[in-house]
Image (cartoon, rainbow, N blue to C red; front, side):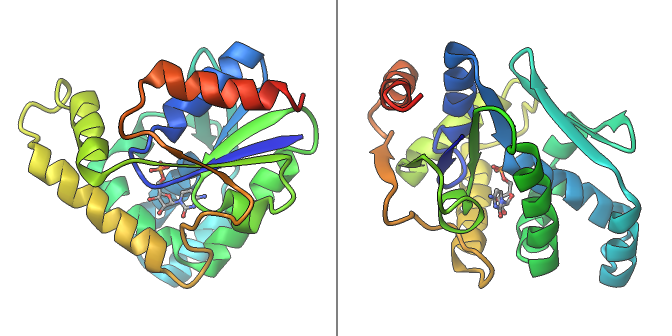
Length: 216
Ligand code: C5P
């Protein structure tokens, strides 16, 4: 069984999906983390496409959710922290726009959800990866609100960061994700839309849990 949440960066889908997974004791799948791990391989290949694809075929990407964290490893070495660097954020949308990369990541995801109950989050899960998902949500919020959330999350670790930088980076990523040809960010026709601009985190979690509980 699969429940999906799609939406733009900073809409609250990751933290909400994790909280729902914890509260209902179900599995959590972070598709963005998989694209970020593949982007590390792209950077390792010096951003050369041919070298990248031949390197990617040799890599073993493994992942699991435990203790509030989506753990991810390449060839047995954890990259859970490495996938959150600025270099990855700057390149991930370009890498994720490559159809062969999408096919690679989609295979990883479809394979893992064969057993168990999953809540997965991303950009195209309800439209392209799991069109038959039992329940689909599309979460979004105003750009300023999303940028503020990301800024609040990151400012302690990075004191030089400004709100404007975060807003610009999110706006650019949204634009690339929504305008690409291969499976762009898009609300599925049958997805439940949740505007989180004025919602508290608890409200978001309660609303999704309530709807999920009616299905499981
Ligand atoms: O969710 P997160 O911000 O970590 O995702 C990183 C990037 O991965 C997105 O900006 C997007 O380019 C890509 N992505 C995607 N399709 C998904 C999930 C993420 O293209 N289902």
